[in-house]
Image 1: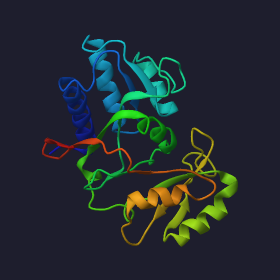
Image 2: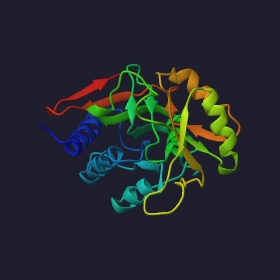
Image 3: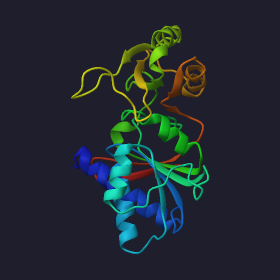
Length: 239
């Protein structure tokens, strides 16, 4: 039986190699690269396929300082969405997820990178998610908290509005620092849970309509192909 970390490495390698075989990844592509403990093994596998000559001239747009640093360590060329060569649009984004429902709706943002992750994903022609089997769930909203990135000055009003939507909100606190987590974009994160499952499609729009909310961790408007691994060493693909 594979550990969770071994599952993440397995699914990352399988996803990258499968996407190359299916010609969903090819030389010259503009690729968004996600953040977190499953996305980074996929970045590493991409670097290996560049190093062995399978891929050339890949242009990567990272979604966080963490991913940018990792790409630079692995000699993957890094760009921003605003670079002329990227032009605000990508061919493919590869990322992880914190929870995935039966319709491939996602909760993301456990690593506090949801804003840049959504900018990259929602400006891509296609979208691939890599995850271990623990991220596959029956519904969203009750188990893994929904991250909501907010403008700090608007926090109290946003909490009130989210409570009216049935959510219980907790300001995410930093680790090895005093005070709240500050995102790469200088904002704060509220983690939200509901007693009963919610409709993520409707709730994405409802939360984003609150003044002072920068972005929500519901990803429902671009359904990805999902690769997920299991303890027995198998990898399933859900399209």
